[in-house]
Amino acid sequence: MSIRFHTVQEVLENYKSAIYEKDVERFISAFDSDIHIYDCWGEWECTGISQWKEIVKEWFDGLSEEGVLLKTDFADLVIEENANLAFIHCAVTFAAHKESGEKLRQIANRFTFGLRKESESWSITHFHSSLPISMETGKGIFNLK
Image (tube, rainbow, N blue to C red; front, side):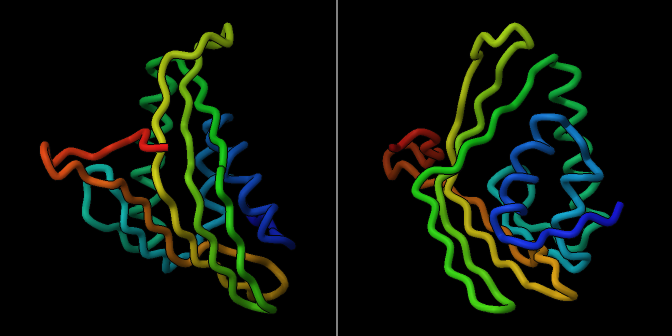
């Protein structure tokens, strides 16, 4: 699948809608083949699009098995961009809903994206999700704000 993202905002909108629709190919299309990810779920890091695609497929399959739709929202969004590079940081909320619309649960993470523009299309080259850690329990804090 070859999707062109002419603006950084198109990349973010694709991120949200592909998650909601559980469309692995469309979701992956926004990431560079040499993507390097620091994630707070399971693995310390992920390198390369094929490894990332497997992780995303497992994630979306789990959502399908559970029968939930995942709504994604960006808050405190800051985008810095020039002609060929962009840097984004924000808080991201993932809210799981039944198909009826009933909200089941939600979590929030802190995200940082690095993007590069090549051949007039933006792609995510680095992605980092994080959580603040409770000093008392050593566990992640998912809803600090």
